[in-house]
Image (cartoon, rainbow, N blue to C red; front, side, top):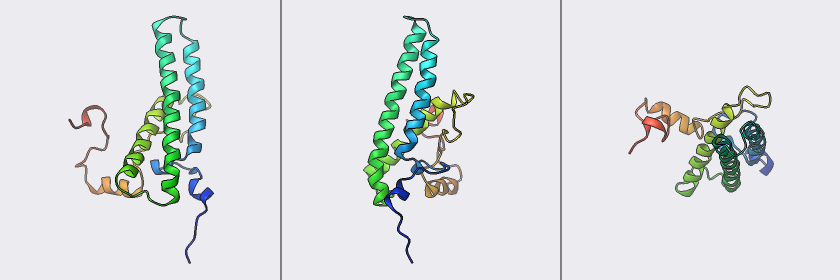
Length: 156
């Protein structure tokens, strides 16, 4: 007997985030609210008109923009999940990779405030898109970069 998951089941946020494929639109608002609050505190602590305040304001604005962008990507991801097309080549894979990248950017910022009582442990970088991706990287035996396109592990 085949079980058919409902739309709400397929689009429900995961209790525990293991893979970027687990991310849903609803995951973004709490992260955005937390980051806006922490960055507003950072801005408020800087001298009016100073360079540090300018940098803090820009970080806040860019971070909010990144949250909106990730929310848009996750909105685009919903029909892919509903149609169970996560393995489709081309645009779907680019979308899937972008979701992981933007989530990780935001969570690295959130980790800076991990000592705050509002911080949630689920806001952490996710290394794999799905089980198959994790298995693929593990079977590779270290031949591929496991660190994406950042730092010294990036290819030219």
